[in-house]
Image (cartoon, rainbow, N blue to C red; front, side, top):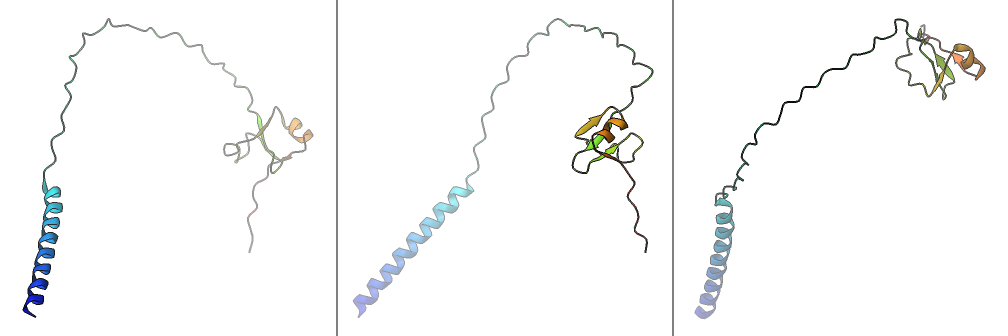
Length: 119
């Protein structure tokens, strides 16, 4: 019986020692400070090249009268928007027309404001 007890004691002692060693090795690896990264030497500065001066070209004046904006049409809703429409800037307009008459002849209807619901 004493022999069995001593064998179990030695087995527990060895397993405890191995567990302690493995734990110590894993913690030791994490505690080592990181090695400083080697920095590359910067190249020597180059002498400055000749300075090049770029002259601005004269800009042509814009025409005083702007051309009329195109009429935008939405092909999903079949509605066209003129520059007077509050939705004109928001409308992407997958169709553009030169005038309202062209939009009407293509089957589009004029924009209308969204009505409010009265209670």
